[in-house]
Image (cartoon, rainbow, N blue to C red; front, top):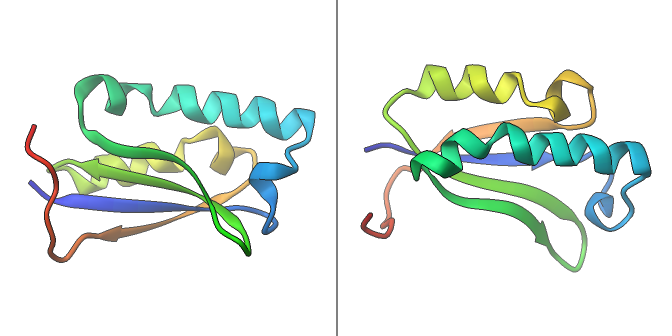
Length: 99
């Protein structure tokens, strides 16, 4: 089954470390939004990544329906509120753990 990688593009490099109260609330809704993918077992990885230079969100999703994933991502509260954006790509090769 195809594997998709979503990178959450934050509004500033240290976003995860400097969330305002309103951003924290949006991020809570963001996490809840993705719960169906987690509950179905389609979500391989989901969460913030911290580097020395910045932070970003990472989701790795196993799904056969790219269009549904794109539409779902477009309805994420981080997108609809203008808090952040997504970059979506398809994993070209590699290995994902067995279910």
